[in-house]
Image (cartoon, rainbow, N blue to C red; front, top):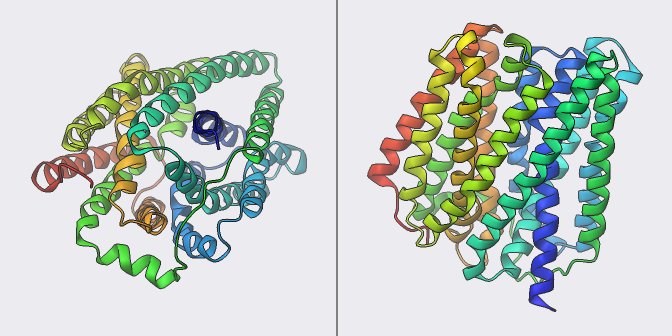
Length: 405
């Protein structure tokens, strides 16, 4: 096995995977959902669906421990995952009824989310097993830079394409171009993974019960769980209606919408190396505390400024969101894995995702039972995000461990 060559393969496939996730998730697909006529709540639930289905990962670890993380099975699952992201394109041709469109949308979205969660942990485990510890921060920051550069270019192209087609009365055709490009990236990604080396994974078989009980009883891991849970609630409630707020209530154009996503991914990419350097000594207070402040400022702008003012302040908001995302990604991709017990990394990572999923499931229930669909309620979700990030800041300043290991 040639380490440098396989390192590059894992880097490229990881970039394609995460770039496709960005492309085929909240931003453009939410725009497509608005085009299909889905309700605010439906689009908000979709924005959270990927995290809600994290609960499935707690079953993924025991399953793959029994089948030995078979490369063939993992790749079949991954192929279904990628192909399902293109199936959205068929919905307008099947029915004009909003109810049927909503059902079809969530069928494809659920398949996409579930297969993605089932395959996530195996690829993370393979990658973290192969890549040397001293190379992990470099890998994470380089991947983020390349990923966001790809998404940046794609967003610029799609913003122009969607606006041109929409102005000509062919909005659907613009989205079809999008799905064709998603399919091409997915095809290249799958082909690359087929010829990528799978490292030997040494892991004892584990039951679903042990997969939950062992990480849950590990007191040293509870700090990680609480940090990730609070962040997931804060970011989830804050961004649940963000896309629909821009497209349906602020009526931003596709080109402006794309520029905002470009700014988000550009700031994410630019600051990845910065946060990577701050993460090298694993002093996570230098990452989490600034992250809380950055996200709080972003959601304060969304909360306290009116629609006319926000149109001009949105670029700043998205730049701040990008900076915050790049900081948390370092914690997410390194601290969680390195806080796990040796040979039980799969169980710990999947349990953390399980907790994130449980926390996220609270959000649509909260929205449906307490909040109703309108502009003012969306402002309330931004305010709740601020409050939660302040709580996380105070907690981590007092209790946050300096090192994850």
